[in-house]
Length: 376
Image (cartoon, rainbow, N blue to C red):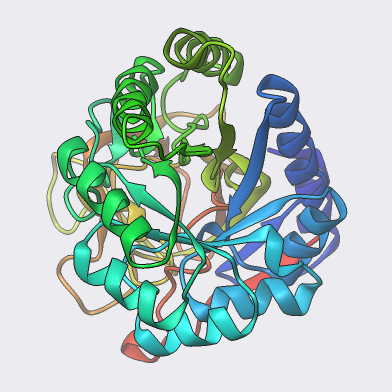
């Protein structure tokens, strides 16, 4: 466990479930990514964790921000970010949100449909727009390709239309899927992006930006490629596709910046064989899928777990949450083995939970209050 968080847990009697996040670790992650891909502007994906302490730290590092809603834009502005540091990266926006962003001088907007493009032309005229491409998400533990993005051919049509209706066609974006473990996924996406750039150039429109999205993985249940492997693959592909005419490069990391900075401390409510002589024990925690661990759906994200009895005899377990809902089971197919000594009242720690936990937490499902958050 992160030594700083471990010391904080030992020094304080915290109510569970709770999330503890090490802000210094986030700065280290930011600097590591900046060093790996120095020619890119880092736009933090605020949806991963919008805590003010995180925004303040990233503003001090001159980060940019990818916002998914007007509310996230407000949070960034209130924290001190400039409008020029914020991209409205959601391709699905309410008219009222576009109007509010435009009034706040936000200049950069994503889209992937003709309907969204016309909304932007009407309510955010003359702003910079970029079209999201649909790309393969093979290799991602949390795919995002089904809901977003369009084809290369349609993107070309949309960007040409953007110019006609008074917008500034600025570039293209894609997302290879969250927790992407295959660096080559970026190669295929960059090649698609280059096709759009070349087609627009034939119409005397010079796009300026390619947004590579996020997706960089962190370590959960298995080893993943290091960031330098992704950086080398990405830089080689960009050079091959664009040569000396390199566009502005944007990255939108969320999980990579904050994931490994967080630990969830949770109490065991019950540990039971449920009357069965054979088979795994059921261990029920005071946090579940509705309490912030939504990414355990399909057992996609598999958090490392540590306990006070690590090193002792273990046995197979099924892990579940506290709610009266049958789908509130975290891990049943994934092989987790935990110490046999664990019992009700013991606390365990779920590692690498800094991303998509506090924001996925329900407000009052079954009456349970949201988990407490501590930023140190």
